[in-house]
Length: 114
Length: 113
Image (cartoon, rainbow over all chains, first blue to last red; front, side, top):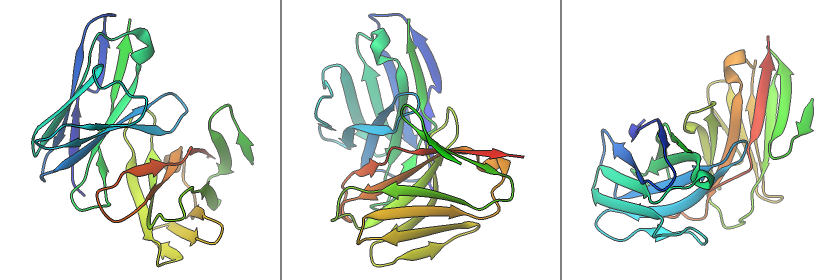
C-alpha cells in the first residue's frame, strides 16, 4: 500500500509554544489529507480535511486559529498547534487518499505539552 | 470473554481461538467499510474492506461480514495469535467521493498465549 510518513513521532513542548507536525505521502500524490486526534482508549476524531492549494475544512468544535493546517504541495500537509496547552496533549494522526475512499495513515505523533 | 471498559470494550481470547469483533455503524447511506488494526503508539493499519453491495469478504485469516439491515459489521479472525493483540476499529464512508471516514469506538483484542 501507499506510504504516509509523519514527523515527529514524539514531541514534548512547553506550554505557550507552537509545534509543527508534518505529514508526507512518500510514493503518491495526495490532493486530500486528513488530520485526526486521538485520546487514550478512544477512537479517532476527525479534526480537519486538508486540500492541496486551498483552505482546510475544519470539523465543528475545532479551532482553526489554534490548529493551523497547510497543504502547500501534493505530498505535504502540516498541522501547527499554536500556543499549546496541556489539554492539547494527544496523539495526532494524519491520513492521505490516493483513490477514494481508501485512506492510508501515518504513524502518528504523540504530543505532550508541559 | 468480553467486557466494556470506561471507553473501550475489550475482548480476551486464547491463542488459537477464533475472534469475532463487532461494530454497529451509524449511517445507512454508507457504502464502504474498513477494518483497521491499531497497535499501541502507532497509526491505524488497513486490514480489510468491504463495499455495501457485498455481505462477506475474506482475506488471509480474516473475514468481514456486513449486515445492512441492522447496520452491523463484524471482523472474524481465525486462529488468533498474540501478534493480533491490538485495538480494532471499523470505519464507514458515506459515499464513494472524497468524503471522510467515520470511525467506530474500537475494541481492544487481548490474546493470551
